[in-house]
Image 1 (cartoon, helix red, strand yellow):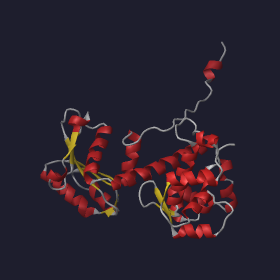
Image 2: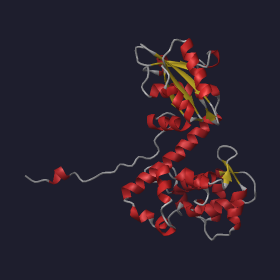
Image 3: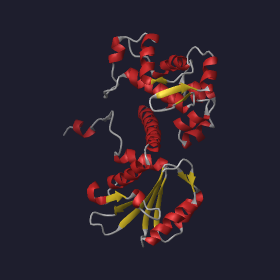
Length: 307
């Protein structure tokens, strides 16, 4: 018997949560083993090229999809609880719940598809959508899967950052700048100055290994949108330091007026929002590690050439 695909876990997992209590993924796994009749062989099967079991992997994805579709809420890390939307979905009494059932929720669509795909989908009928997978090459399918995994990782990273302290975030910003090649080693490249800083400066980083110039940092944990006034305060702090370069990093977003403002000032100020932040972390290997690596090979035609 092979491990059921991850969509097979959807309905049983939703049924577990139907008691309206909070559940941990560890607790859910023990129930699912009995509920789905998973065998010892199923529990031993690993994802290809990785150390995680397929059962753990599929429970994790099922729970993550439900959270993104707001079928589950996630009160804290590793814990889930059914929402009213989840109760309504279960009340439909589907024989099986699939990813397609989640695609009626706008929050899930926003999570799973990039803007280009959204625009394309508006011009597709249901039949085309159902068969779109047949129109993609294996490479395209792999690339789409990679993007979905990366998007999930980016979402998880941002949530973890928001749940950590301001001090942690300020240090993270300096660490990221070092990873991106500024200043050399972490020990002497830059520092977080936190509460002892003044005028809105949270960190300092050398632009190069010799420290010929210094870049000032502002780290702002923010849920909403940052506008021009906050950026003007930072630019004022730069003027106070006679500095011409700064990086403003937030877990939130910026308004258009904030971007327009930095384009028209003498100081060079870079704005990095929450989405950019976690993507830089993934690209430069900060706070993440490789789980599975797939190597795609092609025929070396030169090898088969005969003289």
